[in-house]
Length: 67
Image (cartoon, rainbow, N blue to C red; front, top):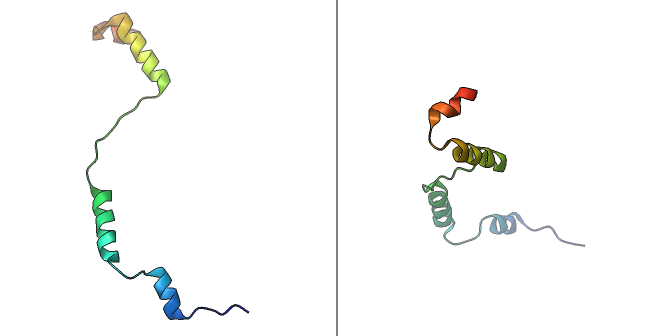
């Protein structure tokens, strides 16, 4: 028969001894650190926008005549 661990054994498994608050603080600091924002477009939009730039360049008045 397997014996059930006592409550003190369970606490040792859930809360390891050591610097747990320090580890949590480091993880929170890492999670809250500023990051470089990236912006990605879907491939079909990149193809379409590339087509428009190739066709019209930077002539924005021509681009919006078809809207």
